[in-house]
Length: 316
Image 1 (spheres, rainbow, N blue to C red):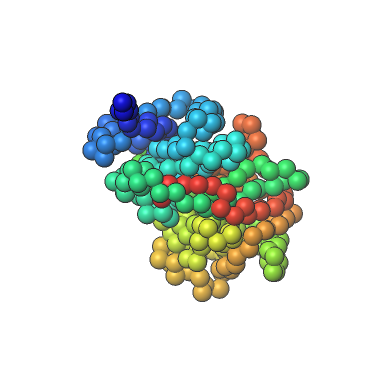
Image 2: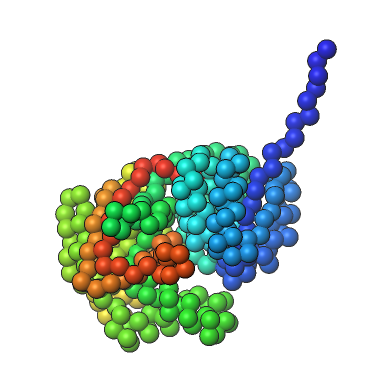
């Protein structure tokens, strides 16, 4: 006698960050659920209450599931990837990008909700590189996308302050960014003395931005590192020399299509290990998130960045 077993669809946890994109994820939840139903997926939607809760949920669910889906922005995916990597599980991370920038989903062609859900339905896995931020011999953070110092981190903090005082600016990302950039220049926070050592050469000087990236896109779709590949064992470096606000805005326009590479203020390189040193202390911004130790923003004058090849599995 043959016993027939009913094949139940496997439930997939979807963790929604309600703060991402100014609440965009929560506002679109019903629409997302409808699209999930159309593809015959079986979701378990879990809404995080805070950043700490998001990390806790990821830790707990990574221990029990082969796939976790993040609904949020780049910082959501960054935090979830960190928890998966720290836990040492083989859990694959899937993205539904509803944040402000969504540069990580953009890299993998997953900006469109339907594309993201179809990828989850197919379940095709891809191993990508990550990098470890190392301070005084200790790994502080892993990152799947990018980390930057200089104006990127400074502007991020100014934008957060502006939006706190004027919440309507949340809906006008370009305007808030321009206001924050102008404020940084006014306060003479547009230059940082740096030494950046790669496996082949060392760059020294005053720089507006130092970006280390695994993906091509930064700052909402600017093709800042046109040659970057997420699984080549390297991170790409983009150094922008200290320059006028006008020159930086021109670079920002050129970078939309990756046409900034030949500009005299730009240095591009690649390496699997970077040593970064400065005479001044600085903040780190990783995948849109100011890096913290506990609840306190990390402020340092040196760090190493070490690439770990194909350490994270994603659904793409």
